[in-house]
Length: 283
Length: 288
Image (cartoon, rainbow over all chains, first blue to last red; front, top):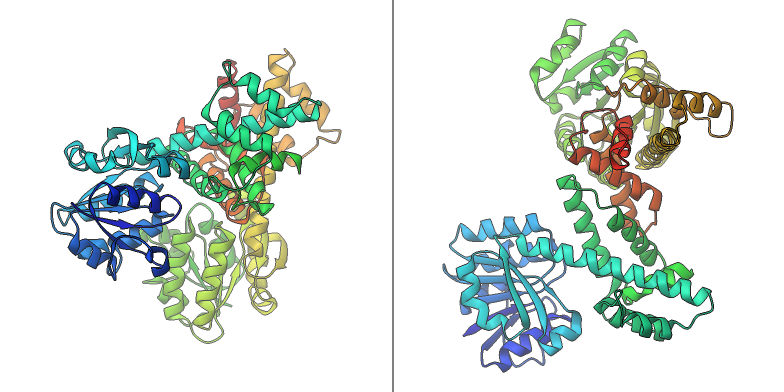
């Protein structure tokens, strides 16, 4: 199948390569042409041109504005894609913005799935991402073979926007767990206990989690080079709090963790891993 | 002075009336025509649009709900502005939004002052508002006679946006202050101690505050009528939290407080005074 890909960053690049490796004709557009230079793909001059060549286009960019720009903006996908084609957005954006984009594309008969992912850069490289999809179930079935090249757990959540709601839930649980691990490590170290032993012991019990496993290990080794850049979690927390506010839903823990993320950004660690929440406590 | 006034709600109407009482020549505009009637009856001229409210005037003042409203009316003001017009916004909006509006107006040759107020409807009627202004010295000086009809404690805080920064700081202190008093009262009652006595005792010491005195009394009387509606306090705390997010600023107390107000709006207490946070606390701890 002719598959388009927009956004060739830490997540997008390995995802695009998996699609190409599975035998699909990969077409790409990138804001900075050099990021696509060495890819085995057809390069397109604009998102609209990419849209004219492809039946399915993936987008993996940073913000709601970025997704709107490449889909609905001037020379956007909407100007190139044929009715019946599909846009799969794997970015993390606000649920209501995803619904808005879906509606606008829908007016032209173009399908939209919000399909944010979890699993980080390693999950993208290993093709083990968790994919949470919002949109029409039949549309998801059409692209399921493509998504199966990218991830293992592919769940249809509900209508458009539902995928982004679940991604917000994912971020709330994950970053709160990072904060909990950081506080535990900080307490242990201050009490003169070896953090490596703490992690080893806890991993066998009720406090076991993927975060304690992966981020806890980074805290023990004091390896704060990104995995996941903390500034992206900071961005996501802005989305979560805004969504909670609009629904009148109190999220006291999320709000507190968001303040620790603000402090992390203030310390200049935004491009480091979110395990840096440990360093915020030590500062 | 010839003044245009835009936005005649709970706050704007008494503020505009005080300008008339102060002898100023007033042109008014409101989105809903019926809101203008009280001012027309008192001798103001009605305008057909924000541009019309600015036309021929030396000063134009807006008092509306939120940043998009301010931006929209000020676009109109720029179209009607004559040379030397000073535009003053007294709504509570984000500092960054105020700065953007100021820059846009500067391009049209209009000097912009952000001058949010504190003191509520009571202060607006009595003409005793606190006014915290940001913008140029010259613009502030020109607006000062108008400010003196509406308020008492009038401070030129700094450059454009500084008034809104000060208002946001005010909302941090009042938001956490209301929550602190409510928590102290919940604590006292759960321990079987009379709130009235607690308030009386604390008023003599370092916990004294105007909030403990006034809001505390209303909590004891269980008088939850606004005053200052909790959804508006929630809106203002959202300005605080969004600004903190953009700047990378850690404000744990404000964040916790904002969530309480968020819960108030979600549980149907939004139209009540912000002291209704006491009810939320009581529900959480099974004290009803």
